[in-house]
Image (tube, rainbow, N blue to C red):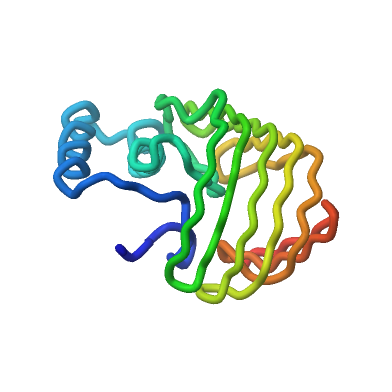
Length: 178
């Protein structure tokens, strides 16, 4: 068990891994070699995190956070047909995704998800119970300036997760940022 630093306040679960410490260090060294120059709108810490999580979980992950600006060119996309379950630090989740496609070039970000089911219980950081069922969702943003999402879902739950106060009932929702 290793502490999760995922999410606004830490403790979020984005997936599970079976990678060894030496494999992780090797991947980090290769990333630094392949991305020697930091660029605030493309090759940056957000690109590192997305690419790392995708590799670490073998593309079987749930990333809710949208990058402000990063060029994500790893294959976080296509037919996924996979799921995971995990529990740590007061957060338990089981998730399954049928298919998704994510693309990020600098501040331009888009993600399309088709078929996603998840249940989540949060007891720190945050508190709540959630059941997410997305038929289809299109999420988009332009940096940290404007963004949104639309689609069909039956999400139901109430509580605080990912730094947001949320209340959902069969797809109708309200969210405020903490």
